[in-house]
Amino acid sequence: MLPIQNEMDSETYRMAVRQLDLAAERLGLDPGVHERLRLAKRCLVVSVPIRMDQGRTEVFTGYRVQHNLTLGPGKGGLRYHPTVNLGDVGALAMWMSWKCALVGLPFGGAKGGIRCDPSHMSQNELEAMTRRYTQEISLLIGPQMDILAPDVNTNEETMAWIMDTFSMQVGYSVPGVVTGKPIVIGGSLGRREATGRGVVYCVQEASSLLKIPLQGARVVVQGFGNVGSVTAALMDELGARVIAVSDVNGGLYRDAGLNIRQVIKYQQEAKTVVGFPDADPITNADLLTLSCEILVPAALERQITETNAGKIQCRILAEGANGPTTPEADVILQERGIFVIPDILCNAGGVIVSYFEWVQDLQNYFWTETQINRRLKQVLIKAFHEVYALAQRQRLGMRTAALMLGVGRVADGKRVRGLFP
Ligand code: NAD
Image (tube, rainbow, N blue to C red; front, side, top):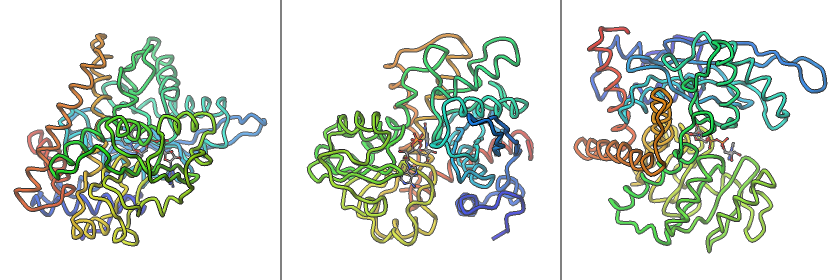
């Protein structure tokens, strides 16, 4: 295996490259194209100085990485987290390249992040940091260049600040520079729920293939943010029994099923699920190994590793998060017959509806929520069955099949455009 020859080294980046290497080997990818795809096309590292509420100046480090732009403008979320680094952002950008190609969107892969702890920052500080970061990366972003979206610890409001800052620089409104923004300034109906809704569409397909009735099925969700809370609520609506959920502070367990509406209400006030009455506490580590039909990691990367993969007790692992399972854990899960719906397929609902939002913004013509959800389902289910068919045909795990399709399409794009666009 070739070493990684750039500045992006991090455990998560190495994991993304390992996945690419496995897919490249199966595809018999041209070594030059393979080498090119192991590296990002562009990385921008910026300093983001802001005046904190107490009067002192703090300088945060921000990143924007464009992994590949062969199929269209860059597309990818923006993350605020204390552990954000160039390697992790690079890995997330690479996964965006495969994801967009897999579900047939005309986008390349990108990602951004700022190393900061938003739980210790005021709204004013977050706004100042977001606006300054936007200014610093504005030379790389725009509706035809690179489009941002929410990710961990960013939301509609963050997207509105970015759109406003970018628009002020050019002198007119540019809604297409971000997706996942508020409806009133050009956001799309259904975008907020899209990732969780997509997870649920994939779970419905998998459970019907495996003949697992969703009525009463036990569901465990790690991470109760945008993706996790929507997934839990929709699974609950379908009649499944959500027995455990968690956030960064800890988890809740109730064998008879949690009242998800009440948990959401509680979390909105308490800013955590911890302390919700009518449930037992559980740690994030124990939650992952609960016996259940469906396990949905919807928090951060590398949660399921070779250490706990042998103890995972679900039938379907539906990856709401990006990169929750390491390649070593993948091997163990496959041996144990756990059906994995890989991240680049399972959580693609978010970028699919982001694509719809971008299209609506570009044509200034907006669709109904019913249209959005119907089209989301069509695109995602088609991709699901393409992945499943390849996995069956070549006796592969779903992840390898998904990566082969995503990587293969990016490589095809490179081939027809000339070698190194
Ligand atoms: P979010 O910030 O809304 O929620 C993250 C949740 O994870 C929070 O509940 C947080 O407390 C919890 N969490 C953080 N660290 C944790 C830990 N160590 N253990 C347990 N829980 C922890 O973020 P989100 O947008 O829901 O994103 C979650 C995951 O889904 C990320 O991997 C993200 O990249 C991925 N994703 C998000 C979208 C989207 O549209 N937002 C789309 C595709 C993929």
